[in-house]
Image (cartoon, rainbow over all chains, first blue to last red; front, top):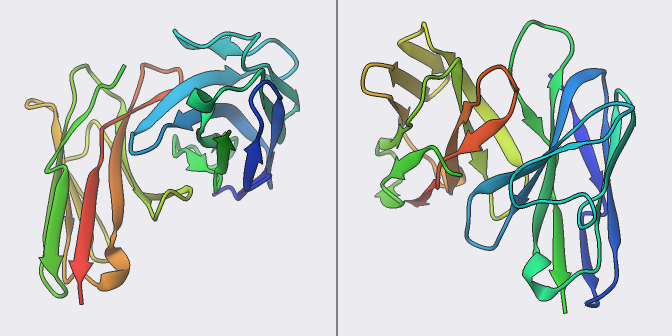
Length: 116
Length: 111
């Protein structure tokens, strides 16, 4: 299994500002992903965080709004840029362990973002 | 886009009763995973069932998969108040590792 931590756990931000969320995994993983969960909704994939290269974004999400970094196998960041109240959501990172031959995807505790 | 449809959307039962949640999906899958989420926190992984498996158990949890009907069910036996949470199914998208989530079922277990 993999234990995933995220920082911050929650934040309240002013519109127009940016917030960077950190995701740390306790073991090497192959895949890392970022999801968004809007209030009362299910999870939607934002992007796949690729180690050492640009992230792969899903339809409706762009790099200028959600820049992502993944400098190594266990760490990734997601920045929510130029925030508006519509960005208020829970942001979750996930990862698939490199060992064990399983496709199980583990999730971090989430970052609850409120934009005023 | 959302692939999974879950029903019911909400379920309220008494402690000790069984809870069944269903998930349907649209495309071929390699596996299907069930997760639990307590009060908007992170997702806890419950079970992964592969496309060549029909049933899997873990403690009080039983998951079935019917690939011909593109559906899965999660059964929680002898429910407890602590089982109160939202439950999501998620299917993989090809070999990309990406997960597509259902809308979720909100379960309330009354003591």
